Image (tube, rainbow, N blue to C red; front, side):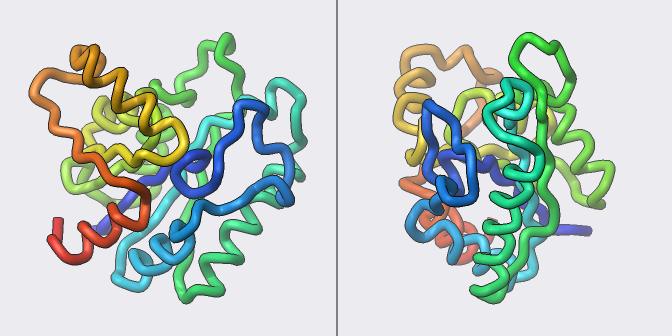
Length: 188
């Protein structure tokens, strides 16, 4: 069975922007994130990215520009001895009512269709409430990182725990690197 980790992109792997990341030049990895992905990959995990990219629907960037961002991500990880196994993108806007825009589970379902992994043994790492909701609703274990929108999400969950399923434990990590360190040393 595949050992799978699903990562959100903006705010988890790379710096986020309220004005959207629009080019490979603007796509800047969060310190430690590329090394963290490579470490998990070298340890035998399958790593996929699940990302909402409504900037496509809004016309802020083209598919070619998005591909260049993802090529940059993959190239940086490969240079560290790892790999990104797949990148799943929702290109729709928030008013398109699609099934793939997180918090909907369409991307998660597609990932499990493509990779023989057990959802209950899969981690989804995100920085936003919608990431956590999609992962939890898709049957995954979820972890919150405090980069990107993570601190805001942590505050929202503290004030409104009903935003996630009752009893759901959401471990919190400073960043993707600290999540990976815990994963590899604690063996979950």
